[in-house]
Length: 251
Length: 307
Image (cartoon, rainbow over all chains, first blue to last red; front, side, top):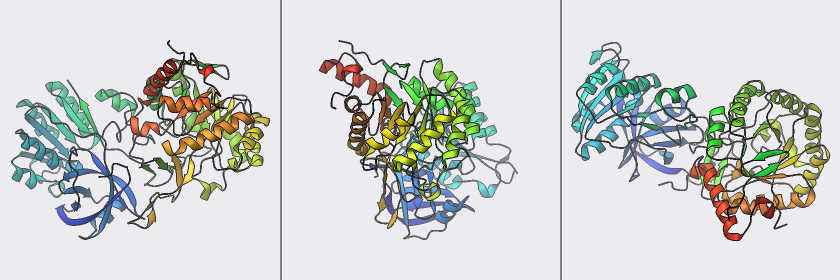
């Protein structure tokens, strides 16, 4: 849609309530060929511009957690409002094999329904492990179940699913045998998933989050810390906006 | 024929004439190392000033069909912190025989001298004095590059403060850039970097507003190339110091044109947007192929050919 790199102005068609602080904004556009895990820079003039992972491409959708001024403004919009976006940007998830394990932490789960849909269309078996602090912060559980995914949940306070971190059900799923792990969430969770996948001899695709400014690989703001690159085996100077946000860790 | 891309610049030996331009990816030792591995002949760090700066809020950059418009806002950790970044970058780049140029900026003349002194502790191979950022006028006032007097004043202050080689980065939006180049060379500049980005604006028609949070920004990329060629050509006719010709170079032929305009080295910045850091290796290969095809044995045979 925005091959030139400029923003396109969309109309907001629908706002879906995902949980207490997360909304999915459905827009009046489509982006054929978008990979799950790619992102858009969404802009509200006078408010700001930030990256959001694409939650669906037909129609185009963004899942937004209300955590700052721009996301609050986006979550407060009514259908009919204008939303600007440039993208799709970056590299997303690539389907690999047939038995897929998806791991989402908190609002990091945002692109996983889009990804699961694509994997199911390709004939894959999809297990999704979702974790959050509490039941109210879990995301997309019912949508993923309705799509035909097996969904396991974990919450830190035990208010839904098993008590603890999402890593535990993810480890169990890995033991069952999977062809690829796809993870999106806080950095600590990604590193733990990477370690577990390496131990299990399974390739992993991790979607990293970072402060993004230019979004086109020029400003250097979103460079992953060098120690983190070394830990997961990425080249030093890895840019989340340009080389990622999804890092592919092959075996 | 296998043309020779090696070149000499102020006594430094470079494997090729391509230099990472300041402001692009020069924010950390690891990124500068990555650019050197991709084939840059020299690397310029992102400008550091006397104090840390967060820069402007988003949107700060837009890839437009003719290039890139940006107003990052001189994001930097402050000169004191930057010394550590440059020391580590210098250590890694020296191991690859790639010179490190350290860019500095400041809001006032006296701050330029202090910042240069601090940065000199990191022992970069050259200090590039950025007197031409178009995106901080609301805070700093008219850029020092706007007049011969103010450009000369900054150069004099830095020249007195440090003994390292100096290049002064000039702005394109002046009536006679050659006169400004002459003024800074008279004050001791060893080289000229030309040009910085061109002040510009993009307005979103649906929003009815400028897109950048800073309202205006600096235009770079292909749209800037003809402007840069003219500036470099005029500077080459005005002074005899080497020129780092920067603006819109994204192919080997672009680089050849910049050398023909009178540049000794060729800055590459926005091309990283379209092609990633690997653009350095690609431009070098294309330049060598062009020289082989057209019968240029070395860079000296290209230098100033169009002047």
